Amino acid sequence: MAAALVAVSTIAPAAAQSPRPSPIFRLESDEFWLNLHHFLYALGRVEAKMSDATSTGVAAASSEAERGLRTH
Image 1: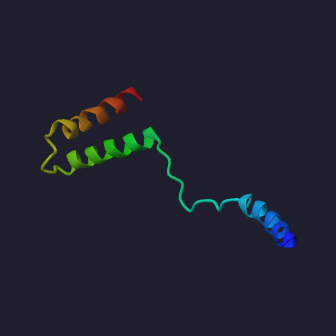
Image 2 (image 1 turned 90 degrees about the horizontal axis):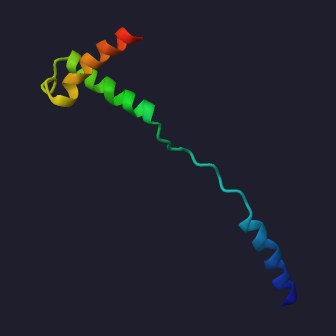
């Protein structure tokens, strides 16, 4: 019985200390790319003259793009 306890006590810590496998995907949030994506999406809707091209959030994209090109 004592040999069984020794065997279990030597195996258990090794299993608990084994490294976790690295995840397949790692999700991160980067505000710059997220904002760029949404800006280009809205700009594309204005350029394509989609039905919501005159809505408040979408219509401003064209003037913002022109302003950005003038300042840079």
